[in-house]
Length: 302
Ligand code: CAA
Ligand code: NAD
Image 1 (cartoon, rainbow, N blue to C red):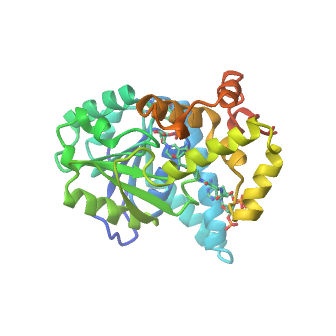
Image 2: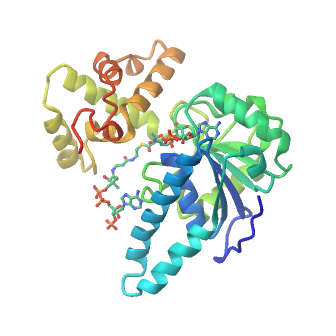
């Protein structure tokens, strides 16, 4: 896949060519912010339908950004969108798409064996200098990178949903991540407009280690009947200044994702009561009430 596009903005980062694997919710956001920052992007998914949808949503989200950035200059706004879109190529072949990458960011399904399969395949074909990173929410970076030879050029780059809006990037150092890789990841994060924090390879890093138990406690509180869903959410919005209440946020992140993270941690740390299963969460997921994406979770959505 030829990257015949030029990068316009002056980059602080050694990374020019980014391959994002997984064109879902997170991958399309990561592709967008990278392209916005002048990087050449290849967005990869197993499904070309997903890629078509991603391109559409990236175009719409870039439009939102352009409207704000170029309020009184709609023509410049249009150019901003067209230029950024032109920097994003798509592919259904992860190996081919990684051959010209300086950085590969993986945002595929949260499943260790699927991630292992992908990274061992890419390790064999990507150039020596290419850095691999995972956007995993809850899995161990050391465990994910156990299948590659380039453990010094591997780390975590954990973005937040919605990627174009949330300003944080967690840069996770694995046991063998080199100083040079860490430095490049931090510089790249800054170049794509994020504020970076550093974290060791611990469950949930910083944000999810705090946010997931908080959401789970809110579900338990609701399950016990201590307060209504609306009141729990209103309480945290007005009493603690959160932009969304915990149950709204659970619906937004996806109840399946919440359950998946909790189950994984419970299995690994059975003595930690904060990670205990929640019958109500299990029930909603079993009923297909997965939150916003399914039209129903704790709330109903049109
Ligand atoms: N792309 C680009 N811009 C977007 C956007 C998107 N996908 N979604 C919203 N925006 C922009 C809007 O254009 C708007 O911009 P202005 O205010 O400058 O006009 C701004 O973001 C706010 O959007 P809205 O007015 O539509 O809605 P809102 O004020 O209710 O904000 C929200 C929406 C930003 C999502 C806010 O509710 C929020 O911050 N919620 C908490 C989100 C959160 O906690 N995320 C982390 C989840 S955990 C995670 O991601 C980690 C994990 O591993 C699971
Ligand atoms: P998603 O289901 O929206 O997207 C995943 C995409 O990966 C799908 O389009 C799927 O077709 C594709 N895919 C699966 N296997 C693939 C493969 N082998 N090669 C190429 N593409 C493949 O999921 P998402 O919410 O974007 O999450 C992706 C990753 O990001 C997960 O590791 C998740 O834990 C993490 N994450 C999610 C959130 C969130 O709030 N949803 C936040 C931060 C991190």
